[in-house]
Length: 335
Image (cartoon, rainbow, N blue to C red; front, side, top):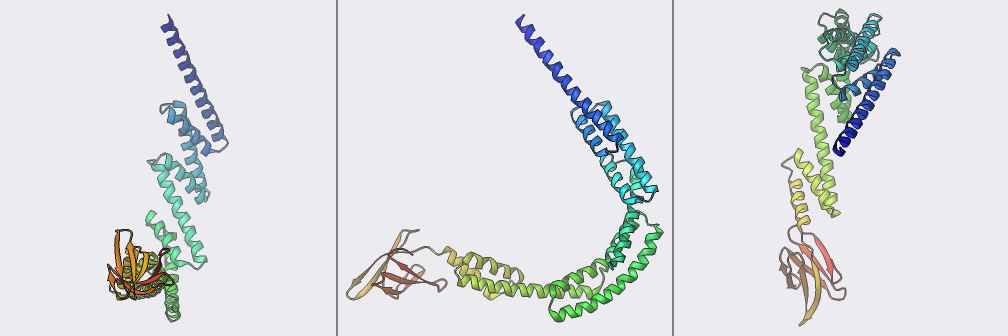
């Protein structure tokens, strides 16, 4: 009996939860249908999709989605007929996200889109940007190779592009004289985006890039030198490596890389004391990383180092790093 009672409770709970879920779905669909009547297709789509996620076979959600698609297509067609191409494109793109294989929607979308592109091209010409106009017209003619309005405007845009290129070439000469190579590079790229076979623009682009790289190389080399002098070895290494990307044969950059790497690998030293034996000063130096200990006088080498000076009063020793020639002073208080 107890087992039957438990099963009965579980069944009641299951039915109750199912009923709760059904009520939520009905509410979503009710809201979705109301939204669709008010022209809010976004809310209608969202609610239908929420129901279909939980109940893929829900006939009422499918019916709502079908009504949404039908409304989107009808309104898009209406906007298209009225010449409201931008609105038609937006509605059709929403529809095609829901139904990518809708041939009717694809056809109307292509026709609406070509008119939007034509309008964009016209606006670009008015702003004296024939290159952008050509790009829009090229896409419009891809959608409809027989689009006569686009063909006519393409002739106009092409003429303006030629004029623009002639003016740009004149500007290029001024930019070269002023050494404004970033602007020259962009100008050459603009020309080549419209006329990829323009040899003069290709030459200008190569020249601009070469000049920019050369200037960047010198700037990076100068920074590498400064960073090295300031003992900022990681930064010096980074800048020297940037130089080598542009000029793999740069002797100075190679040397800076080698010296920076050596400095970064240089072990720390510790001065443990200074003694005077028969008038000669002896420095007692330790390399903590290897536990090596050395007793050295001025001029003596130990490992990759050389003792360059010893000052008993200051309890300090000047040490030269043989790999790079750099010097640093260590004291009994630390490095």
